[in-house]
Length: 163
Image 1 (cartoon, one colour):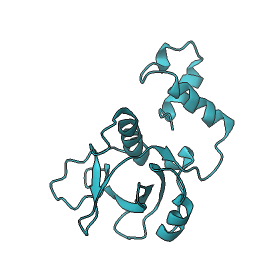
Image 2 (cartoon, rainbow, N blue to C red):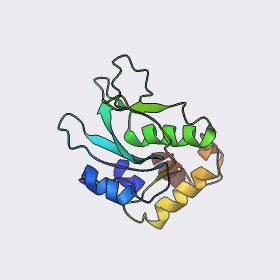
Image 3 (cartoon, helix red, strand yellow):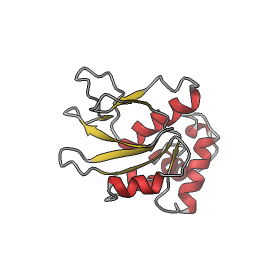
Image 4 (cartoon, rainbow, N blue to C red):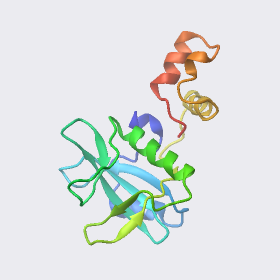
């Protein structure tokens, strides 16, 4: 699902990610492979001040969450990275309170998590763009209510995200 999203940049380094995100609006992000062998992915995010990098942790329960220096973190966890980032994008668009979710670097610097728009790594095919447009104009769970062939409903459900 992550590769289908269009915003997975694979083996881009943190320096390359910073160069790609510099000059972009606050909240622009990309997902890339983590340089840390203990993690699969990292989130590179343009904040109001600079580009920050957060590891995406794969837990022993088979879920993904953003890394936190707090051991007892109640961070939201999801079974895939796309669901994780869809959650933060939805939260960022709903809330004017950008401090609702934040990430604390090991040095103690805290950044509000405004995850607004992905930086595309490729142009998605028209079929996928149409799927995202349908999801953007329907409520979650309404795909079955649409008067569409079952094969198309199955395709829509395979990637149920707006981004």
